[in-house]
Amino acid sequence: MEILFKYYGLDWLSILLSIIAVIKLGNRVKWGFIAFLAANILWILIGVTLLKSYAIAVGNSVFLITNLRGYFKWSTPNETKEKTVL
Image (cartoon, rainbow, N blue to C red; front, side):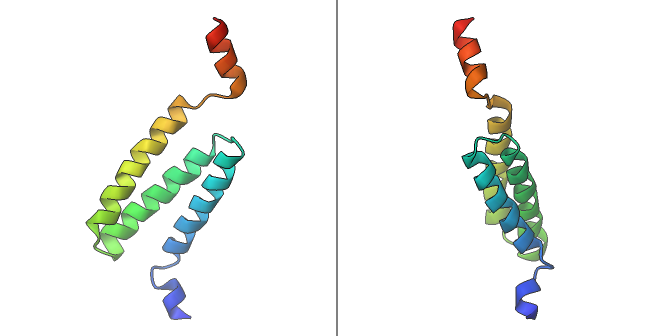
């Protein structure tokens, strides 16, 4: 049982946030990006402090930037139609 919480449950929380994010974005809900950002931050902290894996930290830093970009560039289908009409 202790192996399940070796990283204080932070790894489980990160995975849960990632799953929620994928579901939200699949349903075209912008807040999925926020869930991904939280997961990325947790993975960076886990990578640097607990795992001593800078590859995890660097990779998730890139994902974090990508998710920030997606959040700010997101538009609903109605907003896209309005932009093309104007």
